[in-house]
Image 1 (cartoon, one colour):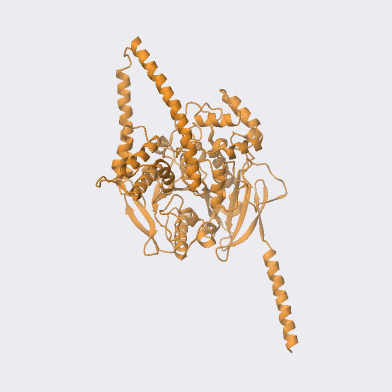
Image 2: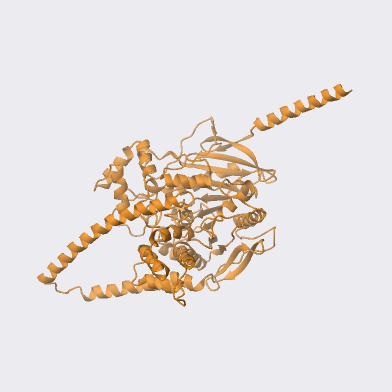
Length: 630
């Protein structure tokens, strides 16, 4: 009897073992149809028992190499009756090694780049909504227009809320934004890639259960600037319905090159580095097109950021086509492509950009002298207004005590950087859109996990929560149950806006976020109260500082040019005698010598800051605000 029982148990164990092996080794696939052929993705369980179909590496344009380099994207070629495997992430677009580290910070273990990079990824939920048309979210990544890839945002968890999520790569750096300023190398190739991806989505997303008439675009940082530009570009008309803009604004000074009249220094440096420099931009373009992709990619990979400026080296340009006018003009008078708009920033936007600058420029000084040194070094980022440094310090620093602490220096300087680069232009864009009868919702993200490695709520802090990392886990972070609750709340706010155009907590709570209006400037504070995620409805976030950047600085700038124009008009016919001419020439020669000396010192400083950034891991994946990563 014992032998019989033992035999039965052993037999059942063998059957169970074989079943487990079969389950582990089996992979379920899903095949969908596109205009260019069939694609096969994988089916996976996400966030419990919810099922999501994942399609990676679907081409939305032909490889931008050879004659297609530095040109607008063209549609991909059909692959006929064969089924294309779409279960592996495509390479990111060419970028410096610092950008690859930035990607690995988000997608551990991924470090592939290639010029053949114009691919998208689609996350399709299964369930009760499997056979109906669902709203679509298209996420546009950040990275200073120079770094990153679409898959840094994982759409799996968000898809389980009944949303089809799409991410994609677009051309970066010189291949995406190089501009000769004469119409030959037009720039904005990365922006035209975004248009091509959105057009592909309009034509194909219905085959993935997505509703082409209910598309929301969402971008973070430089991606946030990009969705703002798409909101105003005539080329994007009819391609989406709603916009989410996170920590980036097209009205920020760094978002766009506004008045390019000749090739800039970056253009000359890159064309020289690939041995294509010429005064004839047509020859430069022809030379770059004839480069083999391995050589070009090697130069870009080895290229390091040579400027200490936080402003991106490569960025979109007002070209009369994608951007007919400056963003400031377009937001006031040109047609807009969406009527629902959600935007906001984090509490400490400037922190990770400010810290390395403090460590570099603040050496050897303390107190107010140290802060003044920092601001003097930061002066090049600010508008060309007399005494602007002192105006800024008066707004951000209390001079009540005899000196200022290190903590207060870090707080004040990081707040200045964050407000100027991110928060103030975000609020200005919200204000401008609300005056155009757009439904605007504004948030300020102030939640900090107890397990967070940073001392503040940094640029990009909310992205990992929207990606569902507290549920699925991430190699670079630790999360607790409160973090999971915050992720759940954020995803509900986003998904309700994507579905209905109104950010709300339904069904967690019967609460809708308040509309922003120019008078009350209402916003939603997202934070933690007694170890519980919470929202609070507020008005006029840091009102005096937002008013300073968005109104007072603008008035100072206008007044300066008004006075200069008057002075120019009065002195147009002034006589210059021979003696004055020689004096002027001597001064110019002296200034030229000084400029040469400063240039040499400048590049020495650049080497020092690059070294310091690397020592502090800010130059790798953690740099999420421009020179850090914007």
